[in-house]
Length: 210
Image 1 (spheres, helix red, strand yellow):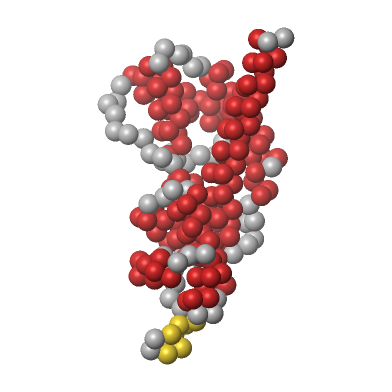
Image 2: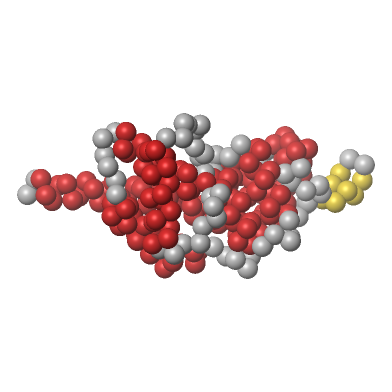
């Protein structure tokens, strides 16, 4: 298909496609003449992935490039490829002073991971993100304990093991696999948060208005 058809089928404007081509996010089409190139399903899949990373994941171009590089690196296993996408989705932790609060929070995170026998890389951004949340709770006057975190960890483990992980097509083209991870992690994360708020409202009404 020509670039105009690629634009029509993907919903991505032609100038944007040309930008992705210049940036190396989208592979070049098959050159059929000096001014014309042909594109195929590989390009459609890649555009869907880029849009998911950009519009759903809200990732900057630099982070998108890291994910694309992982997708294109066939020597990289699927687990590592998905890990690259997961890590790119992490909001990051703002610079902070190394205080006893942070050390204790990190120790609690390590204890939680060990309690569930989770296989988590030492540099996983979610480790520091959870520690930051624990520190913030303490500074707000709350004192979260490992017991407070356990119900959330149990619910998350059950949800991932029995449902979410099965929604990712591991044997599909690599772009499709990463796209499913992005959509599942971000969009269904919002679904989970919204349903949780609905449950809070219902339980509050049950307890306080009956």
